[in-house]
Image 1: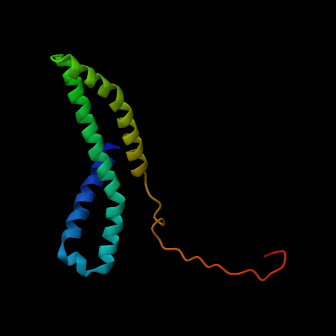
Image 2: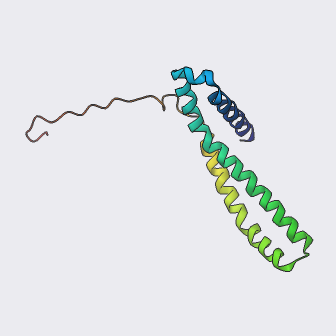
Image 3: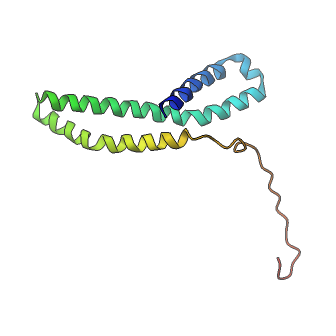
Length: 123
């Protein structure tokens, strides 16, 4: 998963740079494709940032408990140590789901035609 995540984050940065390029704005097709890719990669980047933040908070809480200088802070840190692993597991599960290979036909447009019935029992 880590390899896929790194690839997705690298691609998200590339897409953001390309979207900021004025030459991209002149090419409507390229702009549309990059916009779709950005919309797909943005949630992955947000979740990866949240995961890193949670992991850092967990490390800091564990350090506060180890130091034990302030009993009140240590008690609060214990609460964080109890809460954060469940959140980390949830974020990792969401990331796993977002990193699954996508259906190549998923982004295609669809045309739906509705017709009125002709009457009778079949309609």
